[in-house]
Image 1 (spheres, rainbow, N blue to C red):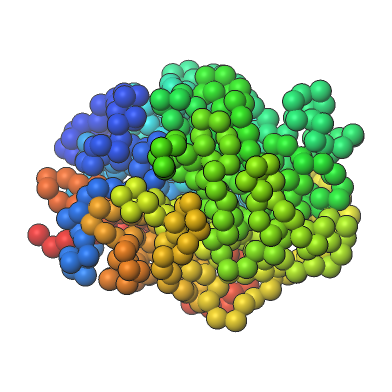
Image 2: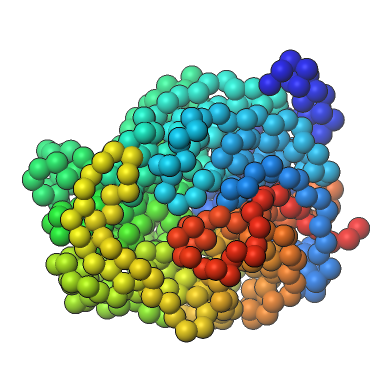
Amino acid sequence: MTKAAISLALLLAVGATSVHGQTAEELINDTSTTGDVLTYGMGYGQQRYSPLDQINTETASQLTPVWAYSLDDGRGQESFPLVRNGVMYVTTHKATMAIDAMTGKQIWKTSVDYPAETPRVACCGIVNRGVAMLDGKLFRTTLDAHVIALDAETGEEIWRKKSIDFKTGYSFTVAPLVADGVVIVGISGGEYGVRGYIEAYDPESGEQLWRTYTVPAPGEPGSETWPEGDAWERGGGPAWLTGTYDPDLNTVYWGTGNAGPWNAGLRPGDNLYTTSILALDPKTGEIKWHYQTTPNDPFDYDATNELVLADLEGQKVLMQANRNGFFYVLNRETGKLVAANKFVDRVDWAESIDLETGKPNQTEVAEGARTGDQVEFWPSAFGGKNWSPISYDPEKQTAFVNTINVGMNYKAVEPQYRAGVFYFGAEFSWSWPEGNRGFLRAIDPLTGEVKWEDGSEIPRLAGTLATGGGLVFTGAQTGEFEVFNSETGEKLWSFNTGSGVIGQPMTWEMDGRQYVSIVNGGGAVYALFSGDERLAGYPAGGNLWTFALPN
């Protein structure tokens, strides 16, 4: 930024209520301060639930746009906005912006520069999912595998650290997590033969504090689950979605992705710690416990999906709607499995999950995939749910999940590793259902019961938001921002935003008025890989939208 631009940004920031450094305590209490949204997922537990009820089942039909801010970008938009002291922070892959939350006027904008060849090693969308904040700083990642700290008031860059050489297939799309005074991020690149990891940085200096690899080297715990040789060096295990944090247990929970290559016959064994949920010490990165959802995964069944923290039947639990089609509930103190039920209509790679061992009871479909047979499996590599975050209403004890109803034809083949090139080891095509390709579902986490559902011909890839007003907010790849009655599933309102919605809705209040904000801009993995010609009529281009009831 030029000096003139910085001066203008300072003046505007003062006019929008000056930004002062927030504390770790404020982050912990984020769910109790409805005027601020300080953490990814609206609280460390990522329930994406707000008690705000001014917008409710009686008033939702009156929602109207308050402002829209152009993100000046034609890529997919998945960023989760944060709000503090009347200033909203949002990201794209190429910029970070501070916006007056009441008017939508830009306070400052800081560009992200990276080499032009970087997008070729980003598998499934050129996106960024947001910032974290602490003590007056914003932290974000970049597509070329850097971590950056910015001054929240001016947008000036404070430090920038290179994590790894992106040219070998590594990238960052994740929103960082600040936990116990450290900044934690997870790497992307599972389809490029990378060795995945989660790592932490000092928020003041940018010094790397620790790195925990999700694929152990020979002699390290878990290495016995890999074959002899060098398969571990290209073993996958990316960690591309933001983890959660329990301050009382001082434990971070983070999901890991698929093993590489997809051809599981080349890497016999469970292949820890891929497709796993890890409980980590935030200061050291030490693994306290792990739970693996899909051992020796041949299907790209990432376990990177958000880990939602809650209290159920007297237990501290975490929940995950996994790509493999099962909804998991674990005791988050011990990692012991509490429940695992199918949440999509067709899951044919496994009959069930053994509650004692935690292992899947796999079928001939899974065995055939490993031995090189041509198989059809459901859910596909898109998953029973893809990246789109779920929400959880603690009052109704109900999770709201955008599911996908697509299968895959699959045959393992011999892969050839080349740095920075897709490392699948499989030939595949989609198996389409008749009718709906996705459903928004209200699910009981302990039983898997579907309380209601709303089908869509093109699956929704947006996140969901639940509120005390009895509502669920989400979006469609066809451009609609939607509101449903969380008890009955009745659609109460929708608004055409002009481009596909694959972002994450959030809500906040100021001066007695409740607002709901979301980014739009299509371009997620389904649009990139499905070949669904129906999406051709929905243009790219992103905006940050904010809605409220009329004054």
